[in-house]
Image (cartoon, rainbow, N blue to C red; front, side, top):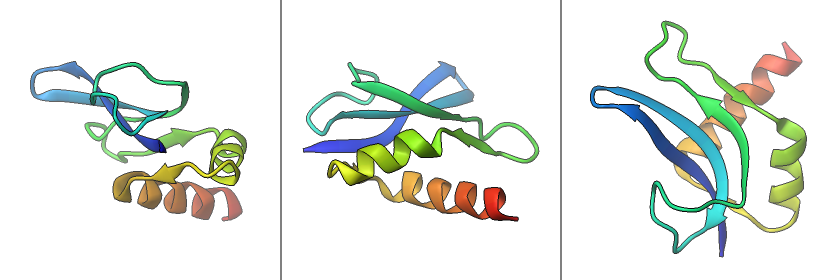
Length: 82
């Protein structure tokens, strides 16, 4: 199964995440198919930068988002309509 999930980057105590599409069996920092955005929780607004066109393409192809990514997508859609 293909999943949309976070890939941890950054140093100790300074996490930075890439939103990636990958095989569900891949490791957290393992290989991925495509990067579709970023998320930096250390900034004051903790905003995610997502390419919603790529997100829609992968969701249409059957990719399953993780719970965290699902909430980031929901927030990104709300910001673009506001």
